[in-house]
Length: 265
Ligand code: PGA
View (tube, protein in one colour):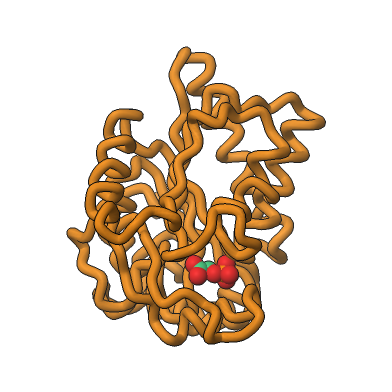
């Protein structure tokens, strides 16, 4: 009897990272929220904390909205969740409108039952001399928490993850980084004008991110289509930091149709 042939999955031949395509951002965000909720509940059953790595920017807003809804309507609790955010501008006041500390409170933390002591975000207020120590301690706290179970990422138009701009090495750790001009332009909408966008930021490194047990990168909209193709289909390179995720064995990209438009499949 002839062997049954498996349906041909064209994506395999071109894509070096698994990509889930959803019709829109809302559906993709609900899918990611369900994965996070399942992990939190599994860890809770095992009487363990769940350690989440979190992102800011426009990409994860609908994810946080869905998690807040699940908290309110489905009793999803964050009491045993520990979080580590990817990055923060430097310098910036924690309560400045554009700070990622403020973003996280507004969009997520103030609306769920997470314990303040379990929240970690790089501090844009510390003095310059303390930054190296702050970054070392950030790495240590991640290790002490048992490592990140699930890291959520967005992707910059230039391929950055966190604020790891092109050129960031695969062994990089949490550190101070100079923002690319393209990043400052992309994020200028959050500020009165481009000159007010900080030139520096504190970011988890590529190796910090790669040490997470599971990684989900989200991308919405046609502006991300070109860089998404590079990250997924081309050889990995420090010039496209998201492509370095090809070196992780449990990473998924969750994207909408517009962001997937340039994939070869
Ligand atoms: P965005 O940024 O979510 O605002 O598109 C993504 C990123 O820079 O990582």
